Image (cartoon, rainbow, N blue to C red; front, side, top):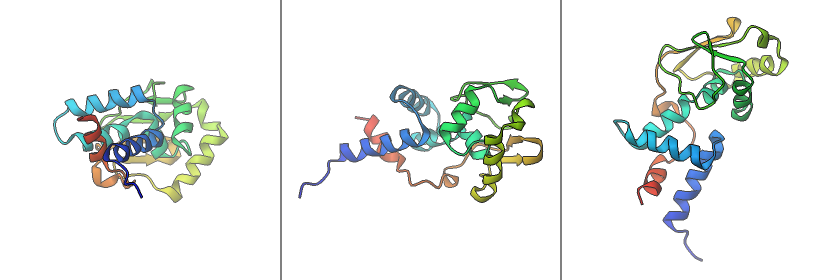
Length: 162
């Protein structure tokens, strides 16, 4: 039986993370390069930057039941960041940003259903959700320990370092 090469394992890990966050190859490469330029551990920076994306934050807050649905919610102008309309899913949220749902969008059934389901899923500690006012505040940047998904970011870093 042939053993899988390191390259194939690294590539599969990258593809898994890309699919998880719903990104194209070019977007992921750009995100990796941005993470590489930042101070700190590249792999952790990558995961933190992926978590900070607006579409992911909207999913984590419970305004959508999946990341792809969150991406659509953002693209369709339902989201305000610090009282300004933002329709770019890759927008990186910062500490103390206030993410709200537009007034008209609060009647959308899909969003309300997703918000009810977030109680079971839970909101990460780096976000503070005010469900009644359709608002969330970014309390801090996400921490590697809070990202519980089975991701081996070191494999991705090794893949890009070749």
